[in-house]
Length: 389
Image (cartoon, rainbow, N blue to C red; front, top):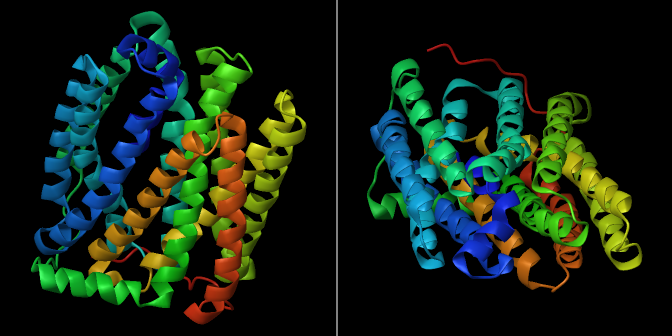
């Protein structure tokens, strides 16, 4: 829901900016605001789901999401659009955090790593294919139809979830006392088993959403791509992430979680450095930009499911809180990455490259130092299976 709602209107950024009489860079603030609220909202939803179960929060959240999406379609100025995106984000945060919590309810060990890989693929499919859908809707019906489509999609998801999915947190007995919730979060922050992979995932999301927010500006404004061509290119991202995410559990079983994550981080560092060189030396060439970005995305596809599984696997008794804090770190990183890519340089390609060149090496250095302290550096994710309820 969150990635679909954000990426479907990326090809329409110039059109929205012209219609609302603002710059395309200012319109990207709707992405930053959305991601920031999704990040904070997860910290509230996670403990609630540990106390009251997963089903009710998801259904309420999807209803709020639909209301906010309809408001987006009717927005007449930037202020109204920002308010609508805030409401939309308040609902989207439930699906974002509880998808991981439900996975942790049902799976463990190597099975959890595989499920997280599938969640990563699904999360990548939305930003991969939605720009193509969005560009077609923008071309034939205008940018507001993109939000109509998202609203219909969310309503169908709401009906499907209400009809087909049962409660997965049968032993919901967590506390919603602010002191108890704060204590749970503090315990996770002090636990290297959680902090190390969460920090890695956050830096990867900073780079990935810098790509999602910055690449449309580069391709549309600098290389003169049409919205349809942009959509087709983003669709190719899905296949890159799919292949990398399916490779991730195999790498973790073969090399161990620590080394497999290093392989993915190495790919992101190579891609980031190559993109920075392309932005500085070959700024008018499209292929160097494309190949460098592809190398980075492959690395994220490997690192993301492994960091998710590593952060949640030890905390099955408080999956909602762990998933909430992990989701918060990822969305906070994503919001920072999208914001920095827009403001760090007037050249969108250079701004994007700088963000990646900072985030990727930092993630690799911190993982290399902290991974050995967290206790999983020499161990693959233990084999697991679906938990029989």
